[in-house]
Image (cartoon, rainbow, N blue to C red):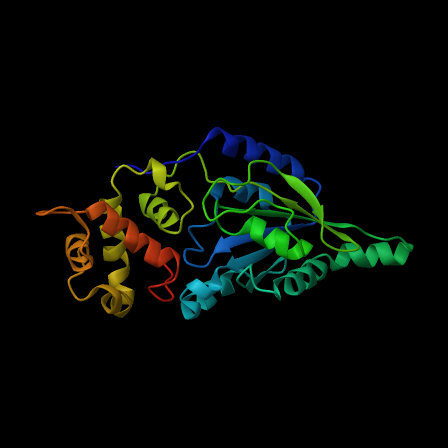
Length: 271
């Protein structure tokens, strides 16, 4: 089973993002801390070079914080910085605005020297369901972007004011036309960046999730499911029955993935 999801609105969104990037000062690149490396979209890499980038390791509260902290160090350069956060937290906006202004210092200083007021324009990009629109609403101080705990909610770009001299553009979550690396594709599915509806065998993937994580997070899994880490055993223990002699493996599989996505397995980072 090959995982691939690139609906028409994503192709359109990539074109819109490319057009908007010409006019922005800072890119707010939202990464899911549970799979931050897999959250990087290769289709955006060449479009974002030579721009100031703030990498936002979102959903940090659900991740393996020690591992994410190590990975994040490679994201800081002369022209980029990073922050850890949960975009729903109340202090998120102050941190982000401060970082935006810091990355825009050269433009602000030039404007100040000329006695004019500079407008800093930032664009929010990332894979689906990474928390972009929730972050935008936090920055705005009110709900201006449509949000939902599923991929594909935001369909078009939208500019919003988040302060006296900062404007931000919310964009749809985007993947890329061909998910050739299926390990990456699986991780994107596990974190909820790929629609559940397109998956033909959730049981196979739920078992893959367990097998992928049990080496590093064996204790997390055992404390939730016991030592026999098979979907069939989990279904039996939870009493998920289709009939007297048949267990509901699909229900058990969905429960395992839901446990991960909602943090019931503790902090896990797949990359």
